[in-house]
Length: 375
Image 1: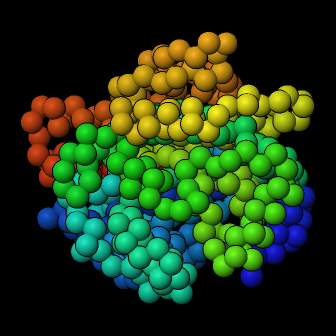
Image 2 (image 1 turned 90 degrees about the horizontal axis):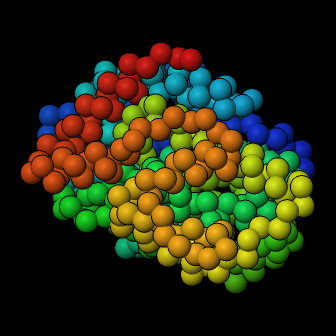
């Protein structure tokens, strides 16, 4: 049962700009580079670790694991919590002969060989979606930011709608689908966001009441039974009292993941400041935001985006997306010049095989996530 009244109270009691980070990793055989169904093994092995037992979660398939920071007082606290959880998870995986991959899709795997984990929630997802659930062999980064006030949280989500394609552009990290070069920069987004229902860029709701009315309609008509079946790329999270940004691919290195989390927090802060100042967000047609979404999916930072807030809409180099986000948000997050998709595409263009590309990605991930020190 979804209690939107209780969810509203959660937002009224929420603290501004607390942060939670959630990262999804592929479970990989370090010798063959193939996905391996080891989630239950690692989950059970983590029971004696007081931090990991509360940080590990399943995420649809048994060859995937999610690690969660829990609520941090701010971005620095959340990053420190996540770094410690990552360190423990990588050590646990290594002890059980499993490597952890951090790209938006696995370069080699066939979705038909993956298995849904045995939980009531994911059995319900599978029963409801069938092929759409089976096909979703993807890995992402989610960031929760506390926003006090239910109406305010919905309006922050509204303001972030045109920002989402820029965040995808800088985070794209998944050129492969089913062992093939897809020609895309974010194959994950094409598989997940363009396939799942109630996904991608949401409508602008304007108020908590409009959001609640929509959720109530879905419940009344048997469309959903829990609010997490709203898979929008940004959403008010009923249980946590946060704005959850869900647009980014999983990141190849710890530094990139941390910088994206910092950038997202800056974007939420700026959106909240605009809402508080009574600024009216630009009335942008959904079709124009979707045009930028497609450009981000297809070309990432190698392409061009539309400047949707300019007096006359024109193109600009997508490589400017990070600078534009920093300028708007006030964030000083440091991201590499080439994102994960660009680094993979450069290897592809040089003639590397999918296995060679993924092996290179895996090396980057193991050397940054598992060896990082807790800040």
